[in-house]
Length: 211
Image 1 (cartoon, rainbow, N blue to C red):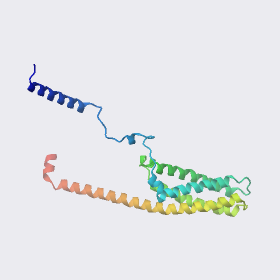
Image 2 (cartoon, rainbow, N blue to C red):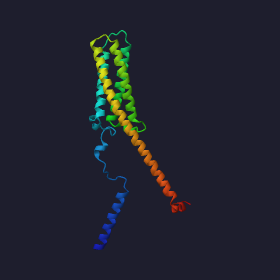
Image 3 (cartoon, helix red, strand yellow):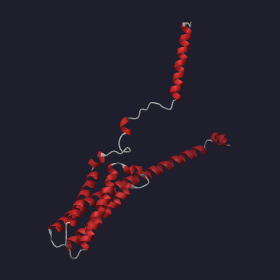
Image 4 (tube, rainbow, N blue to C red):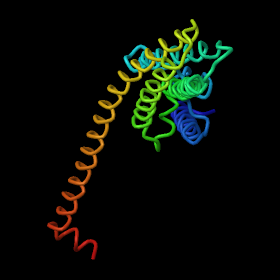
């Protein structure tokens, strides 16, 4: 029979062996929240963006462009038709591009493609949409036949132009702020690198170790 000391030693060896096997086991417990592993590939809706100023402007732009496009599509006869066709092209293009950007920003998909300057992309889209909506609305107002659908399309076209203009102003401010932050970050990295290189030059013991 084993005495008490032998049993205590055996228990200690068993507990040590179990700890070693648990540490070497590839099936380790995880502290990752279960909610992060659910969903469609980690997609989540950014409610803060949708509730913010830029998100609301994007929603208004999509709705106005869609309404203007529907109004222009209800026109059955036109003469001349150049203004109508141009307005149709502008409203459809703005709807598609702005809708795509709204989807990217609201689902945070743009963070997965950091190679693209999204602030500049949004600025270009809003600026071009403002410019082309102003031209298309003026042309349609000058060439329309005073029908209800044409008047409604002109009204929603000018409203879309106004909303895009406000978004362009805010996008310029956001782009300038991000550009300043990026330049300051680059300058701080350069200063840090220069400081570290000077410390290496003025420390002879590091040079002797490298030699």
